[in-house]
Amino acid sequence: MPIYKAPLRDMKFAMQELFANSEQSSLPVFENLSEQDIDMILAEAAKFCENILFPLNLSGDTEGCHWENREVRTPKGFKEAYKEFVDSGWASLACEPEFGGQGLPETIALAVEEMVCSSNLSFGLYPGLTRGAYQLLLKHGTNELKHHYLPKMVEGVWSGTMCLTEPHCGTDLGLVRTKALSQSDGSYKITGTKIFISSGEHDLTENIIHFVLARTPEGPLGIRGVSLFLVPKFLTNSNGEIMERNAVYCDSIEHKMGLKGSATCVLNFEEATGWLVGTLYKGVANMFTMMNNERLAVGNQGLGIAEISYQNALIYAKERLQGRALTGVKYPEKAADPIIVHPDVRKMLLTMKAYNEGNRMLGTWVAFHSIRSQTAENESEREEADDFVQLMTPIIKAFMTDCGTEVASLGVQIYGGHGYIHEHGMEQYMRDARIAQIYEGTNGVQALDLVGRKIPTATGRYLRRFFHPVYDYIQEKQQDELLAEFIGPLHKAFDRLQQATISLAQRGLSNPNEIGAAASDYLRMFALTAHAYLWAQACEVAYAKRDGHDKAFYESKIITARFFMQKILPQTSSLFACIMAGSKPLMEFKEEAFGPF
Image (cartoon, rainbow, N blue to C red; front, side):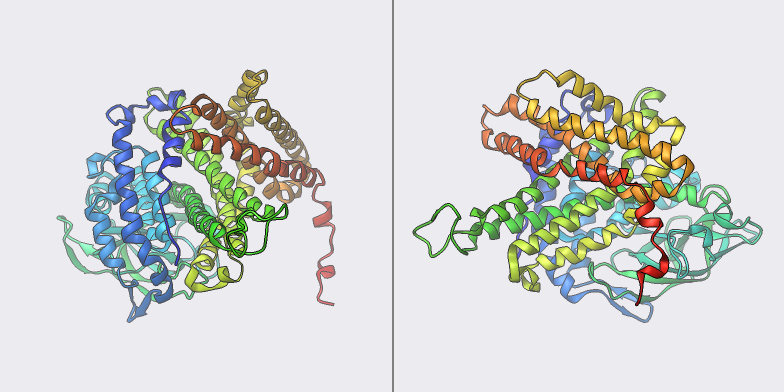
């Protein structure tokens, strides 16, 4: 049976130490919040995740969801756990106090979300979707809609979904066929079918609030004619009391590779009553508020799965006896040495550890900027922070979920044959991790978004939010002998990233296929360079504190950073070569040459 222990010490490092000397640590939202307060909140969240959610993970995967008569029942124990989740206040951490939220920083919500994803990702999707739906309605809803729906969503007794995909269209939302007909009372009648709707139907909340993309008959063709509508499962009166069932039904649930405790639904809207959110024909643009929030959350899902995979692989590697060390017997009192003595096993474990800790720093860095984008005192600061979040969103989503699958796969590999067996839990993590590379926009789409949209924006304005601080840091620390082994590799990787950026910008003007062919490699190079920047800063902190009471922790940081710089960061060299090779090896390949022969 697997285990889980929340990585509170590393979370504390990312949240309270790594950025302690930066302007982000003095944001207004932290003014009345001490480190002790944060530690206490995270400790309580850890107890809930370890003791309530985690024991339901394997059983929830085995049992799955049940669909009958257009209704869904979640696995045994989920309903009781969800009630405790809501009653304990975990649903409202970073929500606005105006609507019943606690107004805590996004970084705390991010850390709690990681714990939920590690302990029970299927469960986490139910409140996770609601959080994105809350952000969407908060930004684009009328005051009437916000005050009617948000308090119940913040409380957690109503949940939310995002209804985009249809049987004939996924990424290309301009093909949406779901119809919306205006009514004399200002409402709309929504008719159509949506598929792959996470949490579209379940028994955890008394109401489910669907956010639906649809088109009115008079709207223009394509994506410019799509609008956004709020469609509740149950209609309510002005006091929020349940009145009658709305005409939206779950006609089946998907039988999936993973996340079996999460209901993925086919929803049919049969002239269901809904209300416009935002203005007509701005549906996709408005929906991106939720989509971008979910993309950051999905990146965190990758980290959550990677963390629990690493923890269990490490324990197994220390306990599993197999063979002897290549340099001689290490444990003569045992029949064989534990497999952690073998270089290949250590390489896998260190890769897992380096990716996890690097991604935790990366996610926290972006979360701090997200807070700044909403709370900074002047507009230029807010704009700069938002630019950075926009730039990094596809990187967070794609790279962190790629790492989630890669780390989960390494966990199975370390377990060997036992990793392939359901009871050990490792194969579930690999299955659960895989969807994160697909939903909320496939990772290939994220790469195209980065290279094709984010980089060219305002002649590279977004890029400057990353390039300038990294360049300044390299220049500042170039003569620091203690950091030389980290600054040198960072400098080389950063130079490659700059060269690749300039080359792609030039080649893409004459041939868009150059962008498409290089996009995924470029995104990974960007992510690795960002990791290198953060690892260099982590070592700066670790060197300053390693002679204190937590010496082993800080020494581990330095050694892990050294492994990253020497064994992982060199990937940027091969990625650069692939980028510079251009699109010809792909696009000149004749379709008939693919076969079959």
